[in-house]
Length: 463
Ligand SMILES: *[C@@H]1O[C@H](CO)[C@@H](O)[C@H](O)[C@H]1NC(C)=O
Ligand SMILES: *[C@@H]1O[C@H](CO)[C@@H](O)[C@H](O)[C@H]1NC(C)=O
Ligand SMILES: *[C@@H]1O[C@H](CO)[C@@H](O)[C@H](O)[C@H]1NC(C)=O
Image (cartoon, rainbow, N blue to C red; front, top):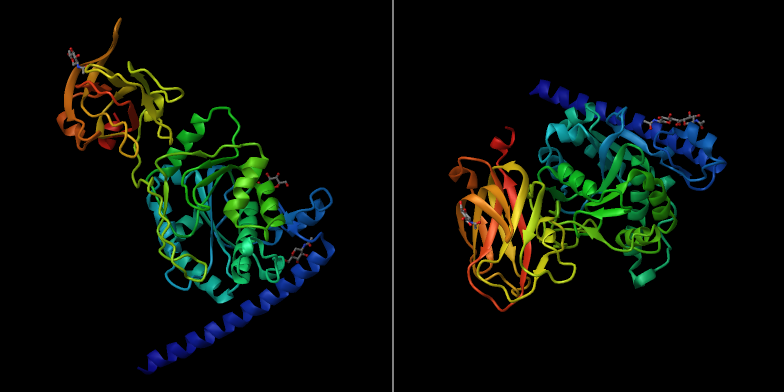
């Protein structure tokens, strides 16, 4: 008992000493950075790489020096540039805090191979210093390996680096505390994005309360490749707020400055779409299924309810191996058959009349062993494919009259326009090269094939 009491006393004394050292250091730092700011242009530094030194050297050429004073609280900056930086900003929440769950989701839903090309940057953006301390400590406890491997960085920007956050313009007639909240959030993101510039080839914005789908980096890579050489500013992997938005690293400093300059005008999701259109991408490019989902029931603003969910989210998205898509149904305008298989929001739309024997065929480029097949037709209950059978086959045969899928195995029929088959691998002895949907009854309605999804058996994928 005495021993216990003694250790409690020592702990308390220890904590008190550490706290005073921390406060002292912080004060010294604050004074220094304020001095620095007096000598510099108002808002300081861009390159994450730049300590305050290079920032003050570059200051003439490069007046915006946002991240110079951002502090690295934990982690090691990787020496080489990876593929993807995942950034998220976190503040103290009145109700549940999901930051740790979010980080766990990022790490457990990714393979080690994916993680070796990824770095996660967490900005602890609360002005409550003790919350920041506690959070760093829990991150260090739970993610020490990730920190030491350069896969996780924790940063913080001191309050005095922020522009005024009260007495701001009340655009959209927002209440003053709402304006303060959203304006600060824009500045948080400016620091985060600026710090992340140059860490990787691409940057993905997340929030601190999301669930990720399995292998999201690989899915993102596939979608980036599918864009080929076409210019894009933002690719979207979720339809929610500031979740799942992908940027080219080269645009990040500009994005940071943009968020900083217009921080008090509007919420970040509005600023984002302005940024995209200013850089001349006029259309949203969003992919389905979504790779990220809100898990929070409460938003970080005043702990209010926030039940926004993305119904396109899939925890385990389909693989859809490369394939060609054929149909002998007449295509309506731009709704080509590829759209059904490409996992975008677009779909195939075919004109009637549609007869028994008409088909829709996916020819894989390499033999595959599917584990699950999902086919969705119709949109809002209209233009369903009413009657059709599904087979997979080992040989694709192009004949004068069309494409056949021979040496085939029946998978079943569509029910009310939908089809799903699990554990396909159990009934297959050989990998297959095609998936064919054959119409079995004439229909007057046009047909929409919204989605064809194929998951590959991971066990057999390796051979
Ligand atoms: C840091 O900056 C220097 C020059 O300013 C540059 O040569 C170096 O590659 C940068 N390092 C990283 C990791 O970006
Ligand atoms: C950078 O900041 C450190 C303390 O944070 C200070 O000692 C140093 O003088 C600063 N360097 C420059 C060039 O301002
Ligand atoms: C299944 O294969 C047989 C020959 O092996 C072929 O005649 C038939 O057309 C195929 N079915 C489909 C739906 O392509």
